[in-house]
Image (cartoon, rainbow, N blue to C red; front, side):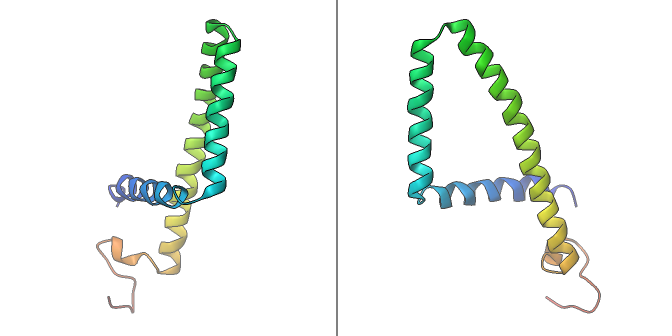
Amino acid sequence: MNSFFPILNWAGLLLLKEKLSHCTPYQEAERDSRAQWAAFKASHSEALNEEVLDLLDRCNLAAVWERDAAFCLGLQLGLELGGLGRFWDTEPQGTTL
C-alpha cells in the first residue's frame, strides 16, 4: 500500500506545477521572489547569503513534511470516504468497480 504514495505524490506535484503554470498571480509572485533574492545576494556578503540559504533549507524541509503529511491525509480521507478504493488490492465491501 505504501508504494503508491511516492507515485501519487509525484503525480500530484506535476499536476500542481501544471496548474500553477497558468496562474498569473503565482507567476508574478515567483518572478518577484527571484528578483528580490537576486537583489539580496548582490547587496550582502557570501557568508550571510549562505546562512540565509541554510535557514531557508530548514524552513523548506519543514514545509515539505507538512505538504507530504497533508497529501497523505487527503489520500486517507479519500479512502475512508470510499473514493480511492481502486488504488488498493481489495475493494470496499459492497462496491464494484
